[in-house]
Length: 312
Image (cartoon, rainbow, N blue to C red; front, top):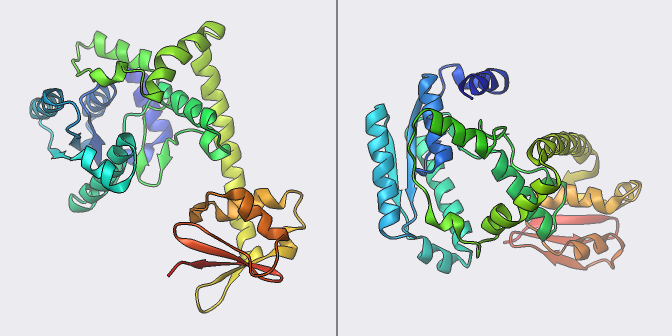
């Protein structure tokens, strides 16, 4: 796997080797530990960041100590931080999993700025991507949700995304690499674990080459998403204008010339936090004065335009 990983880096992420400084998110689990060893063997300049979400008592503290000891052995700088995850989740009315995600990425962003680092490196693998695809599929989603995790998303890079959990485990065992097992990973009350331990094994019985089939499908969906993104970027200035007061005007007449105006409207407005998309779409034929609000914006039907403005 080491040679394959090295070739993968050279082909997909050559920019990482041009004097860039990296921050590697490490939990202590097998994926992030293997990623750390691979990057260390390739002589990358990187630091480690570990989040202690304080959700598993002594086990969480033991994970933290494990990565501290590992960093010392590899002579790597490490940052650790403890979070009151339960309190954050309750205060912000989000799930514990979402709370952990929001807090860790906020902290990672702060570390990148403080330490003047260029990229955040995470250890998501091919199995993680399949699980995310299935979770989004069961909840209902569009192309964006089905296209899965991206290898490069702004300054976040996921170089293990093309490698399976089986490959990672084989590399760890062959190189006598130790890691920490998160006991919560076997609890099927969590949707991801249920899909990992119950659904995917059944799908692999149907198709033993499931992961590689998914890898090809994901690539095609990513390519389609990029085509849509490019198309919408080209269309935006032709359909949307703005005034001096920061109000955006969407030309309804031009929208209705498209074969599927609702699909285009979704792509144009998906970044403005709207959730009731049927109501948004119905504004195209709605009465003047009708409006829809998101958590951040208001969309108002004018005679010939949809007016998009930031909530005060």
